[in-house]
Amino acid sequence: MRILNRRLPAINTWLLVLSVGLNVILAREVRKLRAGAQTGATLSRVGQLLPSLVGRDTEGRLVKVRFDDRSIPTLLYVMDPGCTWCRRNSGNMNSLINQANGRYRVVVISLSTLGLEQYRRAFGVSAPMLTVSDSAATDFGSAGTPRTLLVSPEGRVLDDWIGAFSASTARKIEETVGVQLPGLLDLDGGMQSQPSNREDRRR
Image (tube, rainbow, N blue to C red; front, side):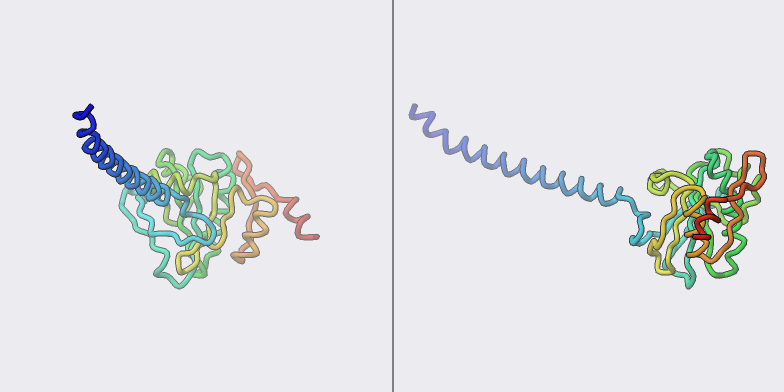
């Protein structure tokens, strides 16, 4: 009993040191998890500042897109070559590109390289088309495609329109950006009118 009593202070000290050490390790892991959550948080939300994007163009060259060094806003158009609604919305996308007239720039972000060059040629896309890293693609594509973001000259997301430009979405984009949109393409390549959009305007 005496030997045990003598060892108890040493055991208690050892347990205390072990407990403190474990707490320090756990605190570090919690900080790492929080940092990871912040790093992986959605960056492309209204009100947030977008960091520079690095992607590859259709010829495989690395391109850096900055949002804080321009005097005009940027329209980021997020699409996937295999997305049916992206293909149907291609006429509206090209209208945004063709009506920029120095008032804004358009950058097309593709979530996949598969079929991208064929898409560009089929729909005559003249704006820069970039594929980005997996993490950026996950962020931009999290809400679905197509997706259109309006970014201020300071790099802040001002608007975020999700989906093809039909009905109220088309009207909001036309009013905000100051363009006229032709409507959605049908699968045979013709233009499809947007009667619901016109009805909304009459009201």
